[in-house]
Image 1: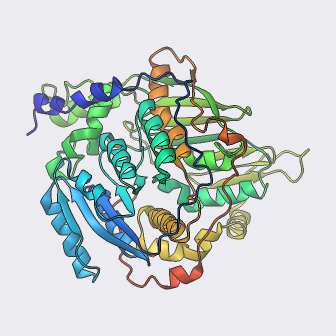
Image 2 (image 1 turned 180 degrees about the vertical axis):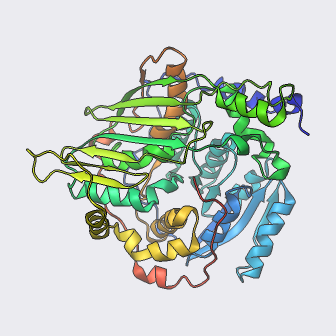
Length: 473
């Protein structure tokens, strides 16, 4: 059984990284070599991928990527050799061929230095930025799990490195590819909801059992997520609920975050759970985590729009990302899906649509990507298919030399919430300026369009393996 001393040994990195993040929120760094908004790298006919991290999310990523035409998983990296061996065995069993194995705490460096096009990062949070920076410095595109950065200094480092190296740095925000999120984006682009003025997103997911689960039994490696909750306040995991709303509102593409304020409850749920589960005198019960049960952040944009984003992983509540978008002509809200629309600008909308009308609307405005590849995505899985669509679209963009759906500025703006919400919550909700990571580029950047892929690409995917590794994100 892990004791408290062993658990706390791994928290030293938190203070070390925090010491690097003293950059003022409104400061502008020098050395900009050109915007990455709308950037398209040269097309890559066969995308050679190295996957770093083969714990909870990594195996599913290997399976999905390997099934995409024109993509080859050529490298696997993890702390533990048995994880690499397991995924290589799977690749061989499916006829894909073995990948080069990289094992050890800094083995990612050798992998990034090898002959790759894309480094796909599925490690614990603290390794996201270091691996991505190393990958870009060695000529590789980087795709990083959420959240991709935890501190403003990391956000700036990723922005500047991406700009200087001209390598994509994309956050793997799979929720942007959910069926309802993409329906929302399509409806927003068509003007059906009018001008979008407010959004609400969240990560409400009871993770108490998983946070305290022994890593040997399938919990987080080294209790890394529990360590973060022990040391930090605010909202460390905003992106699932936030980024789809950013896309619908054209944040970084016609508007940008101006400032935010955050309030947080104290922490009750984790203490109660630990005492009940492990006993009053256990190390788990004596941790006294700092991260409150409910954190609520409100963001104001330069053009006057507002977004509320919440974080609660310690309450016995059903899963929800809220996913609410409100405009001058109507509102869409998820969990469950509801829509209310006014018939004209001067009429109200005082009731939700009936089920038959709602189903007709959802079918009429289904996003083209879901029309083309949704059925296949649901068969392959990965959070209902959104993971596969994210990977499919990413690889399609790389293969065709077109801009990605999410750029490094989207990554930085959404990840900045972690540090800024903590600062605000620790100071009675004081407002915090959000940096303009685009340095004014948001004024001319084009909004994300309604993008899809060629149907021929989908027809070539014949080796389908369902991924039921996780039901919720």
